Length: 124
Image: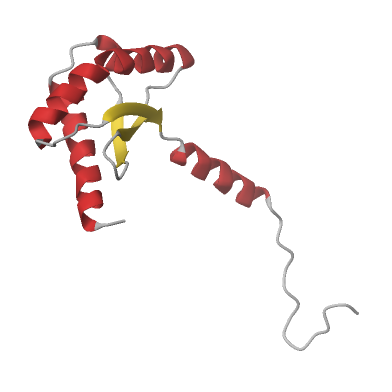
């Protein structure tokens, strides 16, 4: 990934978080955290990775709130970033923390046999 792309991803992440925190008044998006952003090379799409509040109903409501606020956030991003083309925003739940926890749990459950002392045959 180029330096410019990395910088743009970081700017989209930072500005989106700021807009959500300070300018979006929808109570459904309270507690939503922006964890990252990935803008396509052609600037048509920006995937914004978010963490929703716990609870199935709260997640559904928060996602609906983000979808409703997306045009406003996009307009604000355009003003803040001064891009020729402001990408369409797609909010996606970041599941990396959940995946890491699942992997750690699996690794804890794995039993690793003790290695035989040096010089001892493995299969006697």
